[in-house]
Length: 156
Image (cartoon, rainbow, N blue to C red; front, side):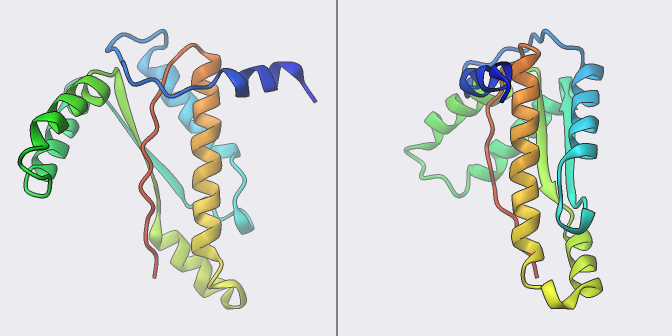
């Protein structure tokens, strides 16, 4: 096995002190995401994984929206700390990549292959995990630090 691959695996870390400066252009980041989506393995070549990437003002607006959503559900005594963490750890970054599964694609595969219908949601989550790891390693290789936050989707 390639030493350089495992060196990359060992070097990969979560970075919480993010900066709005990037060694990569937005275009290069998008290219990494496109390549990762194209080549990530998926059950029955279902390719149900999707990403949305935002930079600049859209990135900041996303995290402002996250804070709005968290305010009514966060304990009031903890909300000031939530604001600090979101602003310092996430909003301060160069951009945000949202990973998700296209439920319609998963449902379509369930209908096409009813024998395996109960497995497609799990397989989609496996694909999502592989995609996230591929992107994380690719960013690390290019000198771009990242912090991944995972939310599992629910399927029919």
